[in-house]
Length: 134
Image 1 (cartoon, one colour):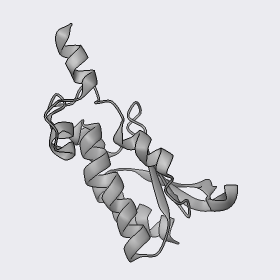
Image 2 (cartoon, one colour; image 1 turned 180 degrees about the vertical axis):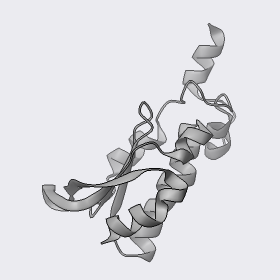
Image 3 (cartoon, one colour; image 1 turned 90 degrees about the vertical axis):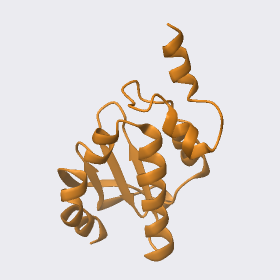
Image 4 (cartoon, one colour; image 1 turned 45 degrees about the horizontal axis):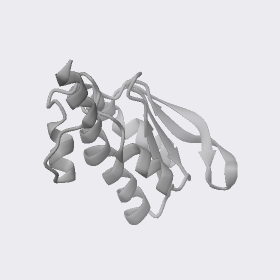
């Protein structure tokens, strides 16, 4: 039900979605408990992995976990622009570490500046620094 409601209510923000089966806690498969955003408008428009993670993925997961009492793991695919919502799958520390350490997307309009802002640090993304030296 949560996947269906998210799909129906989120199309205007995220883009075309479809229900699918996904992994849930306990290593089981949740039938129609997933939503695949086929091409995320948020990611496409921002063009920035840091904005995706810090302004969408983490706050949305937190909302569903803390306010709705429902585990949710979101898995963006920066190559295809897809994002998998897995309702009933708890966030793992390893997946959050990986998400926060995703290199900047080459097309990032801030050239790593948003990562700097989100992390409160003085350096831009190491991937962008390499690209600028070439």
